Length: 123
Image (cartoon, rainbow, N blue to C red; front, side, top):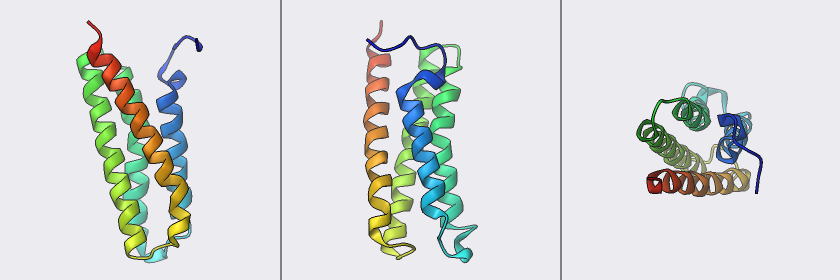
């Protein structure tokens, strides 16, 4: 079994979400300057929102609130995926630049769903 969870920073889903947020910043680094307040800002905001909501939910008093914040994180993840897919469509960067971050999105989504399921199934 893994280490005991002493804070949200010990959660694998939070750690992976932080890696995803970092990737969100990196993937937009070479976007056109005119996208600074457009897609660059949207991708960075959505990607940073995922680990932030996981952390905020962890700090809440009860499980119901925690689960609600995890659903918000899941919503931000879907928003991020949509912005990334649109960035490919409008050719803000070569499609191969997005393959890693899209895989990370899938991985974080699986971890989020698993955590939500485990919290919802606790009595």
